[in-house]
Image 1 (tube, rainbow, N blue to C red):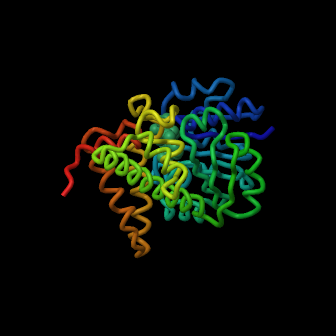
Image 2 (image 1 turned 120 degrees about the vertical axis):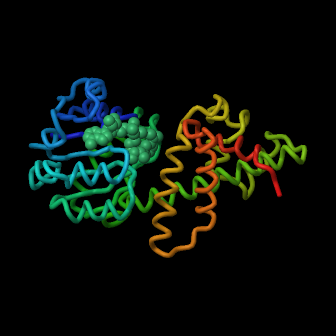
Image 3 (image 1 turned 120 degrees about the horizontal axis):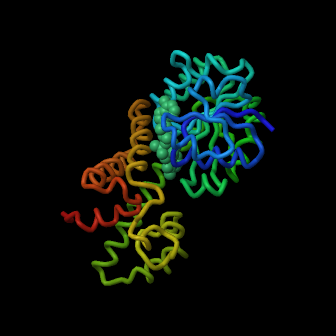
Length: 293
Ligand code: NAD
């Protein structure tokens, strides 16, 4: 049993914290929303992030963006100042690599960046994938805790490596989803059925997760969001956020990612036209509406 402070109990953090309570840990939680705290039955509701972090072996943050994490950890009365010196801080939010490295350097504690993939269903079912950056010794301490919220815990390297892996993975995901959706739209115009394209491409070199697990048209993969009107799942707004982090990192490093940059433009347009709350595979409707040159 460990003492765990958990800050940020939204769509992801709430179920993750509940899984830690279920695993028998003493969880002290904090969120700006009292209702979010009350939903984590069995945890102690703290009056501040600092109070949740006091006396903790591990302090987990699951917050919207880099600025929230920086403020919560390094800000006045923040987690860095209030947690015990031997505590391990674990940030599971998806944030930019530069902020993750700055917080790791500035907090004076063992710090891991540990963003996740698997979405709300993965958080609820404790089947998340954690991609982790930080020192070996901190990883060794934290891995058993992360395993109670997920089924894959991968040490990617030093500080920021987890966020780097998340940005690269989601840029690949966005690009394969867009090109898969484009192929279905092209097939429609050529008189080729969705099922026929699926049957061929899923056994050929066009195969990808976006096709075989998350197929953007209804029918071939009954569980994909296309079969329920593109309810997320993983929303286009979150994909746009993640693409912004990937393309921002590429620009900062002087790296050319032309397909990633184009994917960012397409998701931006989709979100601006009201698609932000839809699943990211719903971009197929946006592509259908676009006129070819
Ligand atoms: P969310 O908006 O549902 O939850 C964020 C929570 O943080 C809210 O409850 C909010 O009240 C709380 N919060 C904000 N500032 C705070 C502060 N200063 N102190 C305490 N609490 C504060 O977001 P989410 O969907 O749970 O996502 C959290 C993170 O996980 C994000 O970085 C997101 O990109 C990432 N992520 C989300 C998904 C997903 O499918 N939702 C998947 C993978 C990764």
